[in-house]
Length: 44
Image 1 (cartoon, helix red, strand yellow):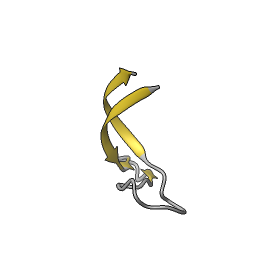
Image 2 (cartoon, rainbow, N blue to C red):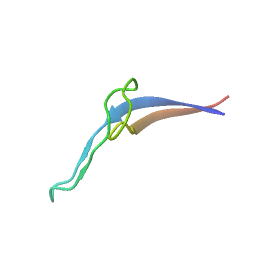
Image 3 (cartoon, rainbow, N blue to C red):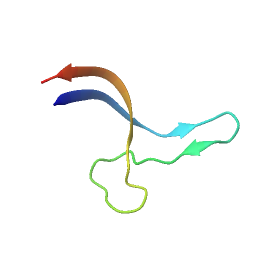
Image 4 (tube, rainbow, N blue to C red):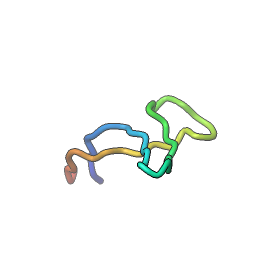
């Protein structure tokens, strides 16, 4: 198991590319996946 520490983010490219992701861990359904900017990783 690992522990990730970071931020939930949305990705926007200069060319208009967009990777839609949720900024909340509490939502459900379509579009509720998360992309995380990892600041640290810890082996448990």
